[in-house]
Length: 279
Ligand code: SF4
Image 1 (cartoon, rainbow, N blue to C red):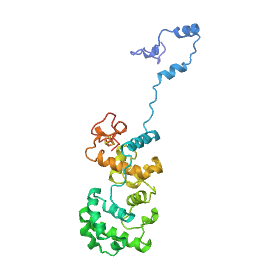
Image 2 (spheres, rainbow, N blue to C red):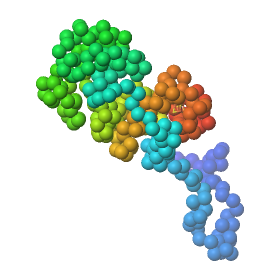
Image 3 (cartoon, helix red, strand yellow):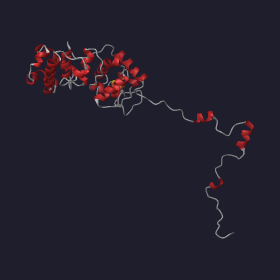
Image 4 (spheres, rainbow, N blue to C red):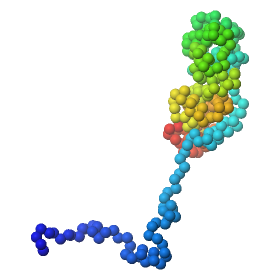
């Protein structure tokens, strides 16, 4: 043996012999007999691959349509629960309803509008005079300031009439998009957006119609997937649904007609899989 050259030793694992793939010659023989090609058969390759599952899209038009259809059948004629006889009364009631309940506001407003029948009556008040009348709705100091501020502006800038344009109504003190959408949609029949109150916020997220937490963004998300003709009705339907069945603490999922298309994480009963992000 030449010096310096070490003969190659067989590996203990047998790797030096290569990977055994059946008896040599078998493949060539079979190909010759059957006329099969060496390239993998298209059908065989397709069969081997796992079929791709269709990705779940919670805002797919057909799912949104199904939700709207079911809401229509549960709440066909719902409207705003705040009692009112004019745009001004609805505006005041909506301002008072913040952080309160419609039931509570409806207990306060009849007497309030008997005492101060016109917007001019409110405009002539000092906040301290109004506070005792709205105290039970909570945050009464701010609410009194907003109501009287809005009354003064309506009298001075809009001839005593609640404006019916979004950009104008938003100039009133204490009026943000939620209040503006309630008044424009319910009284003037103008669908300028979707009302996002605490119920719409919660239920839209549970139904995965939005992943946002900010009311403005939630409204934008909903406006993208709900047809404009449905904006006002949809808001009322979801508000009613949030009050009656999809309540905050213990939603009544067992009674909910949306149950089998709802994957909310906080469900109390479910026949479908739960999505952690739906909360
Ligand atoms: S199934 Fe439950 S969580 Fe989902 S919308 Fe209905 S009440 Fe709400």
